[in-house]
Image 1: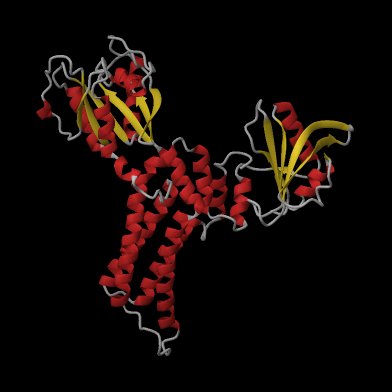
Image 2: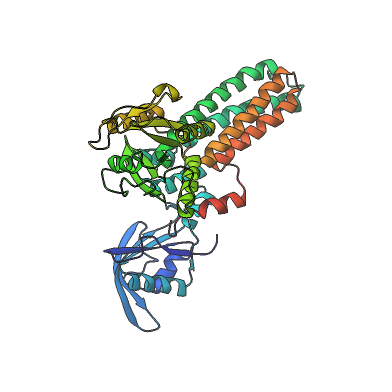
Length: 455
């Protein structure tokens, strides 16, 4: 943390400008060595300075630049930060970066600027992960969730819970360590139980809201499955409103997965059209069928397409049973409803049925409405977007919830209060891992390695 780091913070390629970011105690002096213009060590903080980047060894002007000087502690990393705005272009950008390294900086690791911001107390882990979500967000609602986390609203919810637990722990500690202290309320299991109940209910609400809201940041992975030639690829094309998949009357046309994305009410649907599922001796087609089954297992939503003009076959029933066994949110699409109906609806054990005709796109809006209902997208529209935004955060919250459930059982079984205190402290620490108030070096290294260079 005592060294100075540098990275290119814009996409490397041809463009109007590129930004090279430097952070560390020597960042200003390093850039000043290669800058022709004002003395950067004497300029005011948060100023932009015009000049040239010079290769002193060759006495050569490299580029005309604007250099932003931001002095500690009012910077993203809380260290001195310099940003060199040079002309966009691979050769120019790389040359400026090379000169910064030659003059004493080292190349930053992925996410190291944000990592320094965390380690220096500028942001917490929820804020840091919000930065990733803000960069990777593909919808307006994903942006709103990320901004709520970046602004600290999500961290505040967790810290409020931890504060309640801390106050409870402090009261128990006083009883254990200072039994002679007359003014302290004696903490008994009967007094602790209602407070744990309140904390647990708040935590459950956060978890439930976050699990529902997670689709805003991750999208909904959707698999379109069914027998060959029931209209899966046609359905994909109508949903995407483009000819993404090849459509023919020949069974087994789709032999590999075809992917596309649409947005429904601000939520991204990652749609996968799979190969028709059936018994086959064709080696290539069998690989496609195996992939289809795997995609079905990994998806959050399974859209099973049936042919209205055919009786329900054993393969159809097997696909429906597989989705049910995997506890998948499932929608049955009965396609080709412009043809004579030969399918027996009573044989389908699924409450979510939509009729479509991909010749003229009838039923596509009904399908979208069914997806909205199944994932509570209408409720998410009215939410405050303050959610735990990823699997790590939600998993830790669930672990804390499980520990509090153990506390509740211990209280009921009249376990001594000093033993119960240990479990409350464990739950308190788990919530601390969400925000980074409690963390391990391994976790930090792993988390920030997911960032792009220069951030």
